[in-house]
Length: 210
Image (cartoon, rainbow, N blue to C red):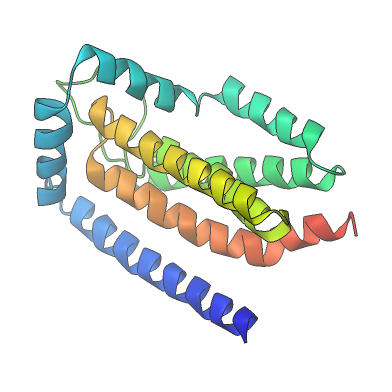
């Protein structure tokens, strides 16, 4: 019964994520700045910016630099039992990065200009940092929730990884390199990817250690 409820919840999450992504894609296709983007700009850029906050946001966005991701993948490989978790995380990371490249080339939305705090190149939609943070840390949430037996540690790690996901997305808006709609779209399409990956691919990897 619990398994069926979990399956239905995942399907609902995937459906909502797909609908939101399709809506954002249509809006971006019309070439207009959405109200969501304007509101996020007014709050994160006009009201929230300060030197201390900027340092924090740069720290969160730096977690998704490729060298940092590789180090974190190696840490998972080193400390997780067996080789399967590390391989699973690496394949997930590669898949999310490749999917983001394809989507950006299809949509080709220019990045916001005039209020960036860091240098970035390439297209804006969907946010690569948001996609990869959801895919990478979201998979770690799934692994911890599925395999960690200590309930307290399970909640602590899942809350920590979830906070990182959100803050990476927020940092991209704050630093002026993405619209809020880019970030939301990145989260949505990555959720779709995660549902597929954790239902089909990840169990196959983990079964190798069984």
